[in-house]
Amino acid sequence: MVRLLRPLVRGTTYTRLVHLWVPMLVSSLWALIDDTRMWVPAVVLAPVGLIPAVRTGEGVQARLLLTPGHEDPAFSVAPSANLRDRLRTVVWLELRILLGGATAYACVWLPILSFGLFRLGLGHRADGIPLLQDAAPHWAWSLLAPLPVLALYGAVVALGLLATSWARSFLGPSAAERLDALEERTEQLLERTRIASELHDSIGHALTVAVLQAGAARTANSPEFTDRALTAIEETGRAALADLERVLGVLRESERPVSSRPALTDADRLLESARASGAKVDAEVTGPLEGLPGPVSREGYRILQEALTNVLRHAGAVPVRVRVEASEGALVLEVRNPLPAAAADADRGSGLRGIRERAALLHERAHTGPDGTGEWQVRVELPLG
Image 1 (cartoon, rainbow, N blue to C red):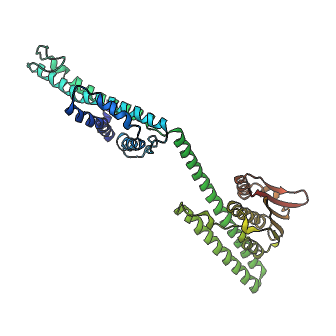
Image 2: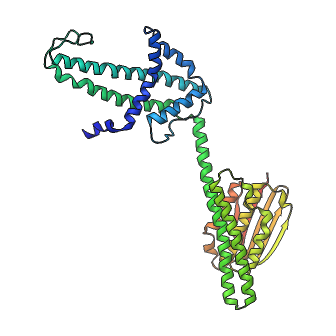
Image 3: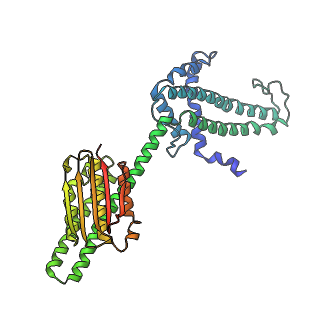
């Protein structure tokens, strides 16, 4: 019983009632002109539904009155983009007129019917009230007086639910809009993944360098070496803070250009950071890095950064050979170092997975692992086209 009466205390029930009454404003105005042709408003509204902006107005009304309190994505607020959307809007307007008429009939005649039954129960006639004008007065009629009120309550709730269901069908997103929403959601997920990868690469590299430098300074027992180590830690920390601020800026400003991200033209900073950590880096850089496409250059920088970080993390201060070759058709990145003892565990980290994901983003594969000659190899060939 409580469940059946719950709609009485919900604001949604009454906002839906307002939504159902809105079309009756047009019909009421027309009734003042000609009350014999009440079908005219329905005919006039048909071409109105073909106006693209009408769909926006109907969607906004549906969100505010049919599902108040939250933005229901089931109702589109975009203008009609094609003929199908316009025809759906026309059908919805006709259905809305129909629902409004049913609501007006129920809200007007059911209370009158209840009043007539109450008069008959008191011994008075109910002249002028359909169905009751020929009925004889009797006290038993008063027992039936609450029934039209209950029917009115059920009609208001049912018509509100029906209007919401039909609105979702005819004002819902079109196939193109659903595809656009899916693409936008996919872009958001990709952006989150990219930001997580950016933080992992940048902060992970800085922490790895700092840990190695601090450990080496503690065991070297040399003030000169300690000074160099602290300088390297400071420079790496500053670079990491700059990267962190940039990534957080992307989160705060969705329109911030990606051109502010580091690219391969900044590769010297990575190489010097690795050398400062004790690794003997032999770098071979050929080709015009400045002319690389932005996405290739930026992702190449991160791939190189993560490859060097993995060397420092898993192999320590070992000789490293780096080859960066930019040709007309592709960018080749190759990092080699002596195979570490823990090579079996190194391939399960998130760093190498990030390298493979970045390569896949540019429709290429990354080759990571032992090369059969006693060396660990990371090799990626990124297409420039």
